[in-house]
Picture 1 (cartoon, rainbow, N blue to C red):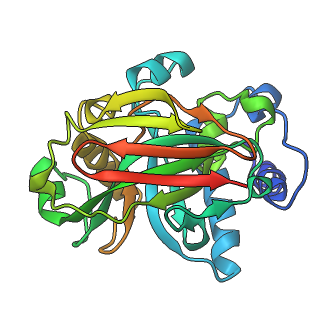
Picture 2 (cartoon, rainbow, N blue to C red):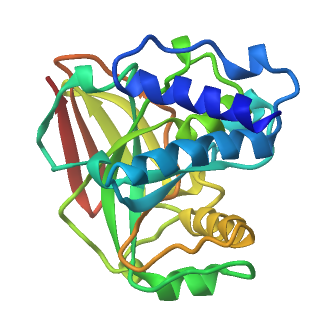
Picture 3 (cartoon, one colour):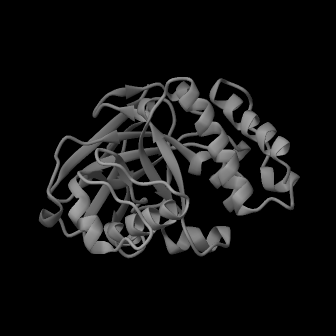
Length: 260
């Protein structure tokens, strides 16, 4: 794919944030699109956002469950960036009009106290670098019409990032059984989904090992102070205006958000 085409597609996706109509799947229009094309389209959008004064405050990992990987025909996750204005306060109202077609995913967010620079990062490095873990809700979104995405579509679209709500009950990593950490998701008071940390590559630690090593090959480090979302522990849940979502993490409290 020529760089001019990548630039055009990056501009298309970026325009949806400003209110343009979601675009048709990129993979339907460009059969020769590959993974390098997709990440370059993502990077071009990130470069634009940074030039506007926005900052990267973290990273997110998507497609960590085997079910989602089978659905999209892939064998590894993807990643995107979390910008400073992606973060919302706990129990706050979020304008549903700020998103295109939002869905939510519960995740145990990692807050790094040390840099992680791959390759050759292992679980011990992630444990040592993690300052805190907190309950969180990721708001995923898609600039691709009707969520008709394939792997390269979501990679190009910043891994379908939208926003994140961090809970206010931090725990040290040794206080949490990351694999067995359970969560119940309530939408408008009704139990909608349940899950556990093992849904993310067997453990959220494995997700972050994967991300640190993949980024390391591209010369990028996970920085101290950054928030890393390791992947959802349930399937994505569609939401609409008026919905209140609460995610109850066993032994860690809950985090909630209202779509106004």
